Image (cartoon, rainbow, N blue to C red; front, side):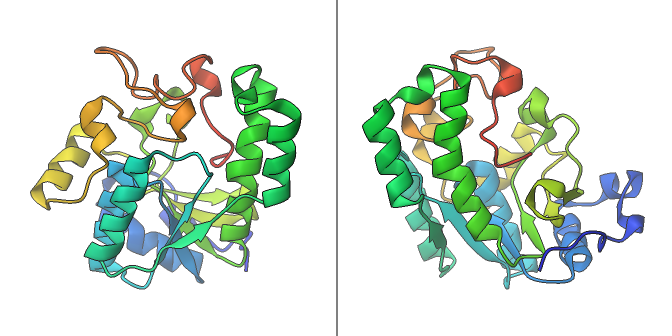
Length: 237
């Protein structure tokens, strides 16, 4: 069930900044006081968090959104993660009729025409399935980091997610740098999406993701035709 004010106020503020990712996970689960699952796109950050969950909170389930337009490499790493951790991944798909109507009425690439069209596509393929995935949960775990983009600069380790019914949003890697993420992944020989090694620091749907050039922002390859402040899909409100 959704929680409106269940998070312990002692867990909000500067004290959280000094916690390790594993401690943030445990604090978030305690604050949620109910079922918690992790949302994974199988980025390097998400695989790092899955590895941490496996060690400190193995009861937390993992779910993923299959938009119908993911890269083959994403499915490959998802399968590697499933096998490595003997993990049953809960996959959520968009509603069939909504996708059929969108593609019939606006074609296959309407999301590149206007910001409104892109939000519509993300709403159908990501936001609506996420709502179903989060239904009945008290909290969810994500692999977001402040360093990733201007839209995530104010992210907190634990937050009340008002956009999803007031459940607890847990961001274990909020303070980590890209280097820390890769150091952990390499140390533990984690399965990694091959696209990361090909210049894709951020990976979403195939037609909305490209490799970045040296010196570009980490999220420059996502919806590259849009301004940086617009580069979210609606999952993280």
